[in-house]
Image 1 (cartoon, rainbow over the protein chains, first blue to last red):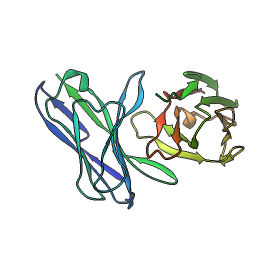
Image 2 (image 1 turned 60 degrees about the vertical axis):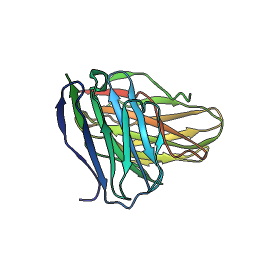
Image 3 (image 1 turned 90 degrees about the vertical axis):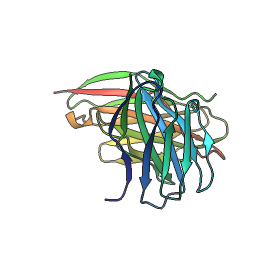
Length: 110
Length: 112
């Protein structure tokens, strides 16, 4: 099925551990995004990539890095996880008709 | 910092009633206004993308209007059904910007 695929769906990390969230889209979209969703905060943009080879910071980039590996894939890396990064993470890609979101990754940092 | 505000934050409506809620956004350098429907434990789904002042969009019982001069959009649901229960997000795009700024959403609950 066409869409945005995110892995993993759930993850528990210990403080200081690192991990990479993977995202891939098969809709040939140029733009891709990583958001986090916290209670009462709505969706906040972490990083985005307007096209292959470019990445830019969003509203809350601290503690994260991203890689636009190719047109399809956009990964988010937590180098040293902190409890404040406990959240639900959504990847998205977009065209003129709007954003298509992945199913989310629920990350808990203990 | 751009601010997109949605009101009310939450809303309870009886099945069969019609309802509407508001999204307010900056009126300068407008490019597009998006509406998304977000069911619990799922990911947001696009409802409408509106770009022109006076735009009206409709999908089934759901419709939306846009006023870019005064910076607001309304989402209407006619004859609410239990399956309409969700959070409705609006998001604003500036001219030249690649990214959307999301409001915090209106959480709609339809009471049977």
